[in-house]
Length: 139
Image 1: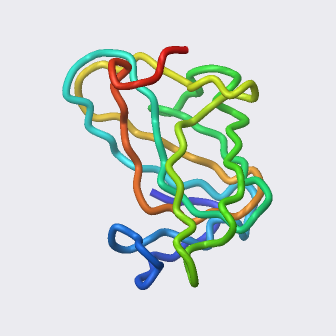
Image 2: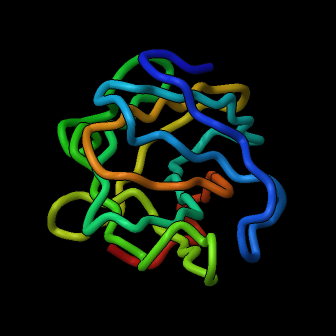
């Protein structure tokens, strides 16, 4: 899903897994959402494979139409040096709070909707992972 702006799906980004999503920085409030399938109830984190030529990109995250907590409203993604147009600028990043702690949330088995809203700064997106708590580093 998408609202408040118009992103593009593009080919040819250096070392992208396939096509990449871009032009997500044009409008503040521009949101994108994805359906995520969770195999078992548990605590999870979200990781993005992204590239950014901005100093820092900011996104607000909601799951199933609600924020899992205040820290999810101000998620920062450091710049990676570009948008993988000329070099491999992709980086994996777990959604983290301002202090660098990984954001976690409890999800039941089944389908969920992740919505990310642009709050400033550009970023291209290559992939999203839902990571079970057992695979996360200790807090």
